[in-house]
Amino acid sequence: MAETIQATMKVNFKLYASLGQYLPPGAEDHQIALDVDVGISPARLLDQQGVPQAEVHLVLVNGVFIPPGQRDNPLTDGDELAVWPAVAGG
Image 1 (cartoon, rainbow, N blue to C red):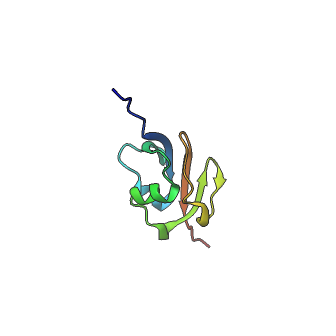
Image 2: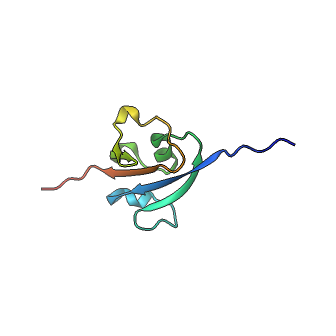
Image 3: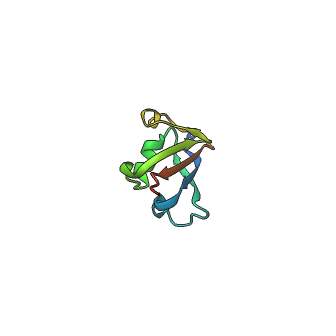
């Protein structure tokens, strides 16, 4: 019998401010550990969680800013994806 290859990995998913409404049930302190497909990108994970791309402003992976043109690069097991909306104030 062939061994089944693990097709998922863990990512710590954090959404702040108004984006917090898109976190799945069970999230605490703006974050949740998710089992996701191996090689998923930040953009794809946000799509899967129903986060509107138009509301996404700041994206960090492991504390490093990810510009919009690089948000299709794959995440790796154990990464932390943190996302903030544009914040207006005065």
